[in-house]
Each structure stands twice: as structure tokens, then as C-alpha cells.
Length: 369
Image 1 (cartoon, rainbow, N blue to C red):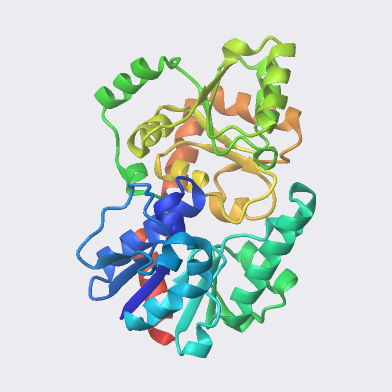
Image 2: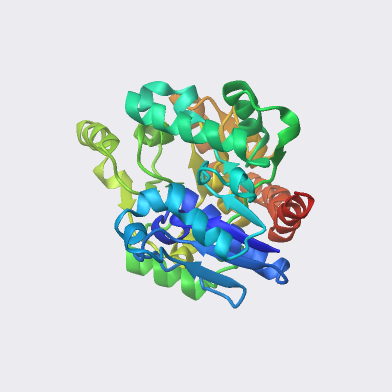
């Protein structure tokens, strides 16, 4: 098959949507190499995290109009090039597909990661909510199949977008291969020295925004002597965190990092005593899977998608209950045996998110369509 992808996130996003997009194309290339993969990139600026294999072709706008108005090309102008390339099926990787694919005889799939803007509208502007809803609703109604990245997201698509269950398939997402490589003691010690890390630390990974709720972890540090490392891009929410740290003299207990390579991040996971992810809501939560593959015990939220991602051996708390989280952290820090048990069982559970199963499921959907 010739499969086209909306590749904006592949070439222009370094976080969740970009990682999902790159990983999917990478594993499809590995396990379904007889297909051809066309990556429709609206503009040349690149995040160089995907090695273009022989089965992959990057496609840029080929007209002056498309080059100048890349957003419009992505919505409409790309259709001409998709038809010219004789694409069998087009996959929108982030809740969107170009307009009038069906009218032009092109089959399509769309992945919807979450509908947080509908569950928690207070976190989004009125204008953003309207744009998101319009794009997602159109894509879900007009694609031949809707991919949900979790059972939680599937139920939200049914509830909020009114899409019939029969049209939705759940295909989990995995994580970058870097997190499946066991790092050597030399690599770990080198990174500890480079980043000036303490011997023991807790870890949180994700954009530093209100929804991710890192402040709850920081509040537990008043009574915990192991510092916290937070890896992620800062937003306005960081000011609230910074103020709390200053008011409570916690400067020596919190370390902020940004701009790590995947290899450095995977090493950091393997160095951490515990990975803590108290997000209020996610479509899936890739950092949990990264931690499970890294054999690092996980504490996360007790509702929504989190038990689905973390499995029965991860530890779960109400994300706003500081006392409960503090107790879980203290329990795990006090028992290396318990940490080892949780890490081992979590690693076994993570195998359900392995690359081969994901690629096989997705290719089967393409073939059936």
C-alpha cells in the first residue's frame, strides 16, 4: 500500500504528538516494509528525530501558493499532491484530515489522542475550543476509521463527538526505542556528573502546565528528603511552582531540566528511584510507558486512562491528595524490595505496548479499509 501521513508533527513537534507520529511511522517501516510511506510536511523547518528510510518519502508543497500558505495547503492544497502520488489511504495523526478526501476518492484514518478541550473547557480559550471541535468533529465523521489511543479516549469520542463505536478502533501507542535499551553504569554515572544529579531522586517528565499537576509532588517534599527532578517545557504555570518553592524554601529539593536527548532522558528514567505522574487527565500518558520500559516504579493518578497505561502493579493516588502521594512516595523509598517488584511487574505489563503488535494492528486497519 501507499500510505500518506499528515507529517506536520513529525517534523515540527518535539513532544507527545511528534513522538507518537515518528514512532508510528518508524515501526510501520520496520514491521511492514512492503508499504510506501509518504510524509506530507507543510514547511521545510524540521525536527530531525526521524531517520528517513528507503520506504519513506517526505513531500513538501510544490506550488508557490502552497509554500506561502502552508496551513491552507495542509487543509486543502495537499489533496492535489495526494492524488498525484496515488495514495491508497491517508492517515491524520493528530485529530485532523484534509478537507474533501472522500469526495476525491481517497480513503482515510484519523488518530484522536484526547478530547481534553471538551472535558476541561476552562483550560482552553473559547476560540481554541471552537477550532478544535470543528476539526475533530469533521475528521471523525469523514474518516473511514477513527483510531483511539486508549479505551478512555474511545469512550470520550463516543460521548463528545457522537461517533458510533463500530467506527472506532483502539490502537495503543508505544514509546521510543531509547527507553528499551538498558543503560550501562558508565552512561549513568556520566549523565549524573554532567547534570550534577544527586545520588537518589524522584522524577517527573512532561510539559510544566497546570493539567500535569507537578505542584502536588513538590508539596510532598516538605517531609521528604529525596529531591525531585522535573523535565519539561515551562509554561505560565511554572511561575506558580516557582513561587511555592520560594515561599517554602525548597530550592535545593527541586531540579528543572530541559532539552535532553532521548538517550539522556532514558538514562534519567533508569537512574530515578520513582517516576511520579499526577496528571489530572491524559489521552494516554506516554511517560508512564517510558517509565515501565525503564523498569522504574510508577506513582500516578487513580482514574481515567492512568490505570490502563500503568497496569495493576503501579501505585495510584488522587492527584490532588498531597498526603496520600507523600505516603506512597515514603513507602516506596523505604523498600527496595517493593520498588523492584513493582518495576519488574511493570516491565512485563509494558510488553502489551510493544512495537510489533502496534504496527500489525495498524496495518490490518489500513488493509481492511
